[in-house]
Length: 361
Image (cartoon, rainbow, N blue to C red):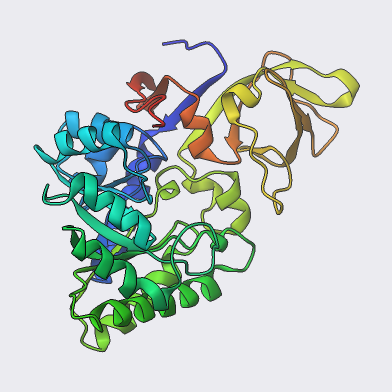
């Protein structure tokens, strides 16, 4: 099947290998895997992850939870300190009728508000702590106060969670994973000091995963039997950020944007893709707005809505009309813009709908 460019294309063999590899590493470390499906938003990929041993799934929005539960996922964690209102409460109660549902809280006020809307419904909460990313989350030492507030509000406290997002920096993975482990232990002790049990300790990200699993092994060696889960997302596909951080190799990258060379203006390549396909994210450490998978020294130096301008690495330019594979900087943002992923296997293409397309509330 000939699919017009630009489109997002998935190498199914690489995707399966990535899913299998991380599942095996988690099993060896005696860690539960709860992958973040906001990366792919695809029920097909979620099913691959669950069949490979994932404990459940992580979502970013109530809408994502609804989409995946509707298609058979039965254990969902909304890893976000949701401010619950009447509408969200109704939606969450409906979900809890057919699935195990947990959400995040990160303040005494948030716990009280969640309890007013959802106390006694069976929906569980995890207390979010700040392990250094400084986005959301309570200080680890204060986790017990939030857990107590949640319990008083009629909520069942499952455990604690964090996101080590500051691991998205060159060379930061080991130190960030160590800080994450320390913060989680501190928070666990703070909650347990109130008399409440901690059933689950949840963390992890793709760039810190290997180091986080190493800390988990030490945790286990000390005899702690608390369930530990990791919530990586990008590992299924890889992207240019992970490539430049060293979290994946080019041979691991399973999703690219297929584009056509449309111009050689100014001695550069111009491709028929842009921010409306790739997203416009560019981290401070990124060397461009994306990479070309088979031309690793080339860089996308500018993006318009429908143009990607590439600084080539040499004098020989791919001919006009040539198709190339672009690695987006941030694959989650690219998938969020797509209606369908074109999956490549045995030389053929088939469409996988982006199940949670546009479900950002």
